[in-house]
Length: 281
Image (cartoon, rainbow, N blue to C red; front, side, top):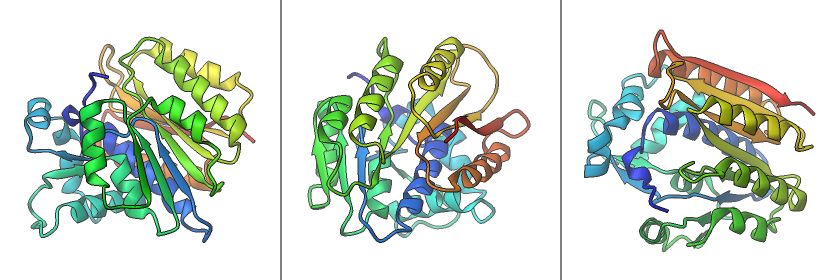
């Protein structure tokens, strides 16, 4: 509960995760039927890149601020992220980097239609208060200061039946991978048609392998593995992954294009990306 995403907002992992999230939500929006978005670790909603926390780490310099100069030459999902960031910074001169960066709830709300709904969970009291303030006038959004895993299993399936759940924990607590797997398996039993996007860090290779092996053995089908690597450096955040359960039709190709295009921008000469089926149909 001590984790604050403001230290890491707009870094390379955010850029990768949010580009893929927008791609998934855009695919959901292709059909007229409403969708429901769940966010188990929602954060504050919007982050100040000029604030003390972001300034102390400087992580946005290797993420959205590096991406900013490459606008106009990126795949649709990444251009869409840049456009949403521009919306959050109205009147911004094209040559000036953005000050504010959106969290996943803000991006989902930006794509949501009047008939769509969002349910957001954040356990940190101050972050939850910021999130509630951000969406206090948006009747489509419900914010809960509660455990996100418990929220997901308690509130699925949604009335809309269609939708996406983003599970994006900080991985600061022991057993986080196990809790993540248990929550997805329990929720999927109640809501088998939902899309589940599970974010994880590429830092501890043995933990990564145990997680992926556990998901393979879970009995779940249609698990798409997407990973972006800055480098192979040990004992640091070398990259990030997003494991997608029930991805929309043909989204694997779009994700592959998206990540491949981000490699030369975010990690020129040393980065790599992978999009493959961990478990097919």
